Length: 138
Length: 144
Image (tube, rainbow over all chains, first blue to last red; front, top):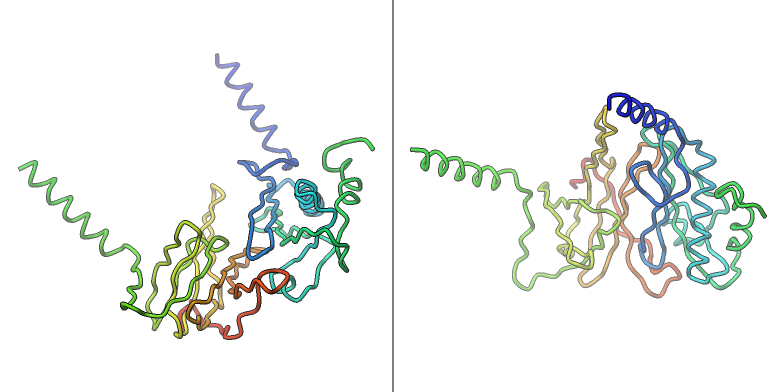
């Protein structure tokens, strides 16, 4: 019994050393999304302290593309802030700055059928990062 | 004696709850109101004339605001990682003058351990459904 408990403890410690993987938000972090404000959608990815900020940024961008695909939208516009969204200034890159020692990124997204200036292609993003995010071979 | 002790404890607790419970703004009958969506800023409070008031959203996430008064909007955010507890309060906090029957939306964010709160006007005619609120001002501690 003691051996089992020790083994469980050791496994927990080993697992705690892993970076946050690509999954929905839970105890170890993950992606989340919420409708609003307005016609925008907030999409975020929170990771643990073992995760790299550029990896989390890719996860965040990929999640936006997944949501666009779910809504049958071939394009999406990515905004860093609401103000930039109102001003119509999209970005092509997601960022995940460190907050309290952990990468934590959030963007505002508008899903669209039109290829507006600065709009990202849903399928292109999914294809580009699938291998990195899910280990899926092209 | 036991019953009396418990009754005294209950009365004291009720009294203390009344002391520490956040105050809710009481609107005068027929007073002009605006609405603010707090879904992206849960737990925000309002400051009017130096007094802080709790904002209570309805099922759709909207709380009432007094119109034509400069109010401050703030939030105190606590986060614990199991070792330390962090506290973040937007500074400067935002103030604005809500107009009657207009809908606003508040947004609370933490980026790089700095938190901020912002307010936008809801406007269905724009691509985002939002517009800048022109009466925005700033104030220390969220109280104008």
